[in-house]
Length: 126
Figure (cartoon, rainbow, N blue to C red):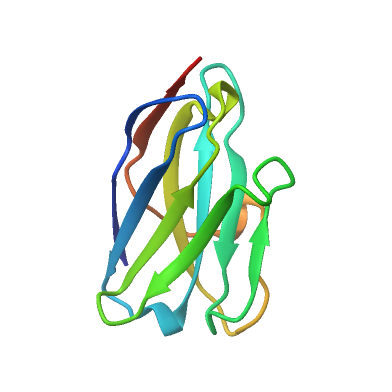
């Protein structure tokens, strides 16, 4: 499985950005997909994810109500829509995936994802 993330950039506080992650090698119906982020000097943390079935989502408390994850099955792509961005959202964002028999659960721990894309920088200015 290969993952290609795109869409990062610089945005002012309160603005929006949309990140995309294109998967190849497996279809989304075979994969649980997650987004993580890592700010300088901090651990990589879970942002959110979507289950294999697409019916379950899991979000970190820090982004609930502001970030939304969606899937485009036709293009085998997962998106992270980020609204009401804050300076503390500044980080390198990574998409991740794993092949799992579970169609509902969305894991939130890094070690539960076996495939990672390259990061994309998101910078939110105050």
